[in-house]
Image (cartoon, rainbow over all chains, first blue to last red; front, side, top):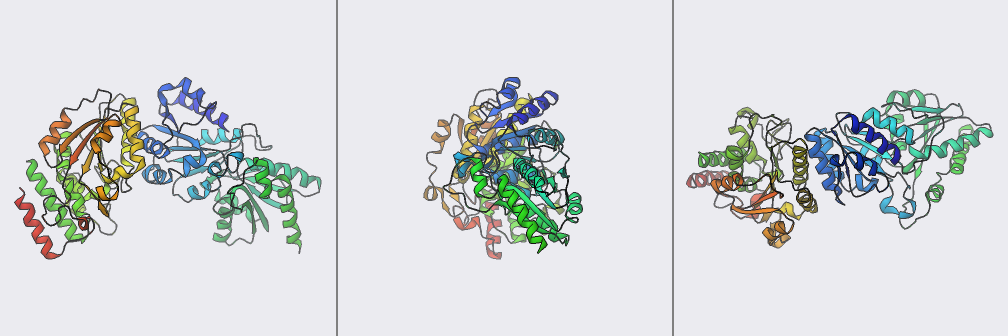
Length: 309
Length: 265
């Protein structure tokens, strides 16, 4: 989604001189487009992410709309307290752009994985949290939220080529997007892993199982009405995310089920292991966490077997 | 007038600390003259919300009571508001909140103010504005790596509209700075990071004001005033005593403190 991000940002910067871009020394072969067009509004602040967020806070307090760019753990976890005390507490329009969701940085290991960013940020009050499923949805989401008065976090997958079928770039703040209709099971997915979910859906349909699939990209504000409505129609829901099962959308959906007394069982698919010391391709890492296409197929079928007993 | 202001601020610090029965007294007393130099002389603030006003960030937010006293004396906050200090449902907590009139940034977490100030200074440059950004940091804040990130950033971007003031009282929460994590030599460190460094007596208002007025905000370096101060300044038994970072005063101590600050006029 990096290409979609920079293309969209260049366009927004042309329209509004308040848009500035800060990077923590990352963005090779991505951000050059912005740097060339707007050299006076591009700042490589060096490998200093706390200062990057602090500087962005000062810029936003003076009327700018700063986008802060790094690999997700460096954009979110290192400066987390600065994000909290700066843009969140002061309600300033800083945009935190985290590149790489889940295991996107695969062979680079745990330091580059992003498995808890949604968990630590969705609990922050009045922070808009967006996790698009593909580049087209990322573009729509950025266009819909770039000039909100408060802060925004964008969790952007590294992959530029994924297109989630049926989504067609749709995004509405505070809403779900339905990308596949069915009555056998409900699946709610976040991020680029939705592509695996759609591949699983195809296989399941060939076996006579039709799932209703919803994309949850607007993490905050929570699509509360859509979720209550949807969860009321199913006895089982599977949540699928490349994130720890604690804190992400599995937790989010469970909270709604509990808060509203819904009679819906929540099966949370996500990362349950501690990925220390294990590297490999993203496909491999997803597979060993049961998040590959076949893992999702098996989980759906198992949930249906259990539901009938 | 400045000396009277210093006395008034010290008196308010003592009165409010006693009324609320809280500490952080020594830290507030340490910065009184710096606050007077800024608010009575250096800061250009035509109106409290004027977008072209100079900005001030009290990065060592735990000295907020000195700032509250000054904001009261400037008329930005009322006596009724001041008397809510440390109370329930009050904006005036131990650390300053931006929602209070005259406070540019909420602080309390050490090591953040200079970064935000650098961002404000960069914004002023992008706006082609002459407004300046003042950030008051404690010496202990120089323990924070993030402070040095901001120091490098400001020097690299030649933010000569940024003025840091270090309250160099040699103390921190749980010890003396030389014993906890030595910052010596402070002057050479800031010079090495390519800042325009000035050493001042942090209790000499006219020296602080004179130094600030001579700063060239069109040159290529950010500025720092290394202000040598005495923790607990003005109250004999508090000066250079670690415990007065924390303790409230008993009745006897309060009485003596009021007398001590009278003597210092």
